[in-house]
Image (spheres, rainbow, N blue to C red):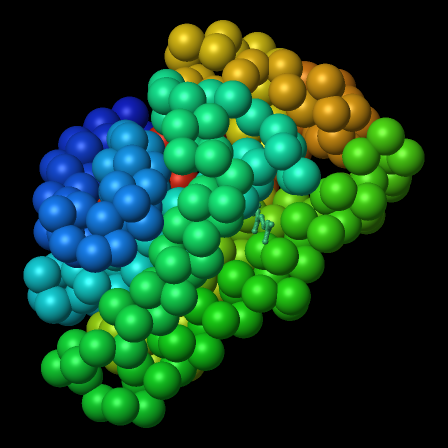
Length: 303
Ligand code: GRG
């Protein structure tokens, strides 16, 4: 175990950290795109989704990792924000009629419902591109480390990561698939960006290779558990709690853990993934109560 404190205390600390740092991330994001300037409509659409709420899990995981290894949280903030900006692009595109065709996100009408499909598509494109502008601005660390952060995000977001997972997810709709297929989809569609959030914080802080390897394992397991919980909440949660349409996986006949192995087995697999993630930290001798708490929060979350 990574902390001598009881697990509920560790989780409560992580929740508080997530709320506080999440607010700081939102404040930072709110200063990025001036809707009063041209192209105002594009900025308005970007701000609409970016500032619509959201847990800020990915940027806060990046801050938590960097802070756990002694880095200054304010200095890593642009890199952390890049993760949220990129995540937000993926939500806008994911909701489009051509993909999941969803009407609600973060408790509000989806971007294309408000701005139309053309603007939503462009807002997503602009957020994706801007994420790399944020990540590549001078951050006060050696250029090789920063280049590595850019590489990590590119890899996690593109065809070897999120977009690749999304492609397989679409192909598995209605036609189904095996547990292996599902693991590929969840790992690529969701877990790799969560893993990248941890790794980018670690690279920023300049951790040695064995520590990075343990954090990579932690990030991937926690990311997989996160998507399993997302699957569970789609079945057990309400639209009001989730801020997005509950039951949409069933409507789209998505390949999910509850559909394939049932709710109880999904819960068990989810706990197993988190335990594997925590063991990776423990085996490397990493004392990071914040990261342990974030993992606990991920399984316990209700939205
Ligand atoms: C390029 C047209 C086009 C589409 C690409 C990349 C992509 C669409 C979709 C990415 C896949 C995706 C959206 C996966 C879902 C991951 C997930 C669980 C999202 C919800 O994350 P939370 O719960 O959301 O962190 P909040 O709102 O809290 O940030």
